[in-house]
Image (cartoon, rainbow, N blue to C red; front, side, top):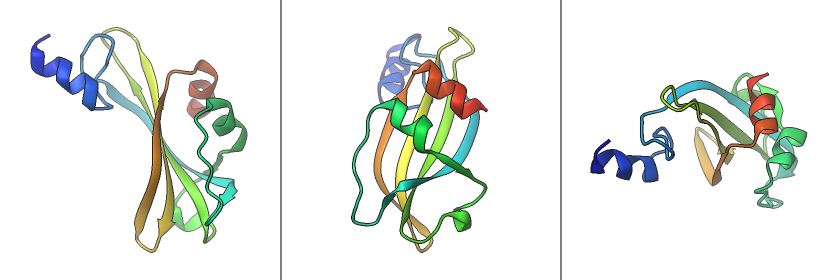
Length: 116
């Protein structure tokens, strides 16, 4: 792998930080966070919070007004086998997403939950 691949792996979620190969998007899903509403956002970096509180929805219209949502993306590296979950917490506002935070996790329990 060259220098450019190492840079991409540091700054792009879909490049493996372990072996610097491009990662494949395995699954994406939308969830709502029924525990967080407008004006009551609290940052949670513990993966346990997410697999205990995420509620699967099919589309943004299924999320009640004023509730936060979470887009999840599971990436898999075919070269070294690494799995990573990216969680993007946002507030749906009209036709836009007001992103609060994004997290990358390799937590096996969270990955298992997101794959189900």
